[in-house]
Length: 553
Image (cartoon, rainbow, N blue to C red; front, side):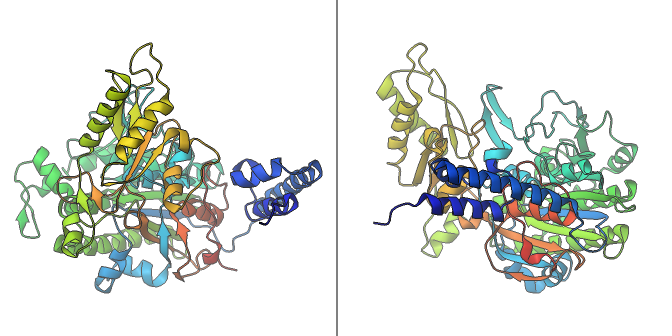
């Protein structure tokens, strides 16, 4: 058996630093552990080399590395629940913005999210921060907050005053910076905005220092919160006066009329149609005009997220005529958005990046019809079984404080005064869950907090998605294509159908080398790459790599 060589580990650790010139704190744990175990001579050599490389990297960072003029506008686009294969499935029918991006941009064909749960808040927070939930704190759309003693959304902010809405929201739960934040801090940035139908999709990509995030509120108007300003700008009030949502009452799409009277039923149905995306597009176009984006030498950033694909996919699945029509509509809207942005920025001064926040599973019934696995389960049944097993093991008590996404949260003292070790509750829960046919893997907080924990790609995605503060005590991964939903389909797993998404950069060839790139890439690589293009600091929690293959020589 080959024995471990400390000198070899020293060289490997130094080589890691050479290829990842940042701080030693961000090195892979195994590299640091190897360095700690080295003889003192090797350790001093490694640390001195790290310092030298760090100083060299700092000096290089001050030099203008990218050629040409910087962009005056960065357009960051997310299409909610867009699988990568939608580009190949419907691509021959595209004639708008998606076609332009595919033909003229740098297209990554194997880009994935490397964290689970693969849900909207996680995707949108990763997009421009480069940080996975383990670092960003955004553990899901919804999670149980021990500090609040209740479930919270990723953007819940009870101290924020809602402007036009019934509940406050802000990016205060996002623990890291975004490209927009760093752009403004650099002195090279102008204005930063986020726009979407959904609050989390507008707020999280824009970041903590954004000028504003706008989303559609309970009444169908565009709203915000006092995190950004004390009152909505006059132009937003003017836009809302046109009743952007209510104007579609009674409209027809795919042969089905929307309810004729505005209200909860109408808004829910509107969300599933391209009309809701049209509202977002119209608002984004108006924002570019009113805020003069791209009109000076500073770099502005506009993050736009289209959500109708997600609502439609959840309701009716992925292999429908409605989804085809939805993607053709997205193609058209992305084209209009790019045309307007290019008009504002000027020729050669627009930089575009497009991705999705997650993919989606085929409906189990669609899989079963092809003799493929899949099914439906009830998460409440799993919680009931775990609770019953805990009662049987330790006695009557209040064991489960809450659940969300893939997590179950234990009460810290389920039987006051008994002080049951968490590890023992974990053991009972794991044994119970592993007996269920739909459960593939079960992880415990104890395992995921261990610095020595390792595993395959699925394990690593779960680990990346685990927030020590906001994730639960038990994390459950189900068998592929099994879902906690009575009808339609969903997403959230660490499997490829939920993680494989489009990732395209488009811009002047002084910034982007167009082509097809088939190597592995991750969505958390977008933020470091944009930062390099814009010659600014990386966002504070970014863990990806620079996609150097698309950068010009």
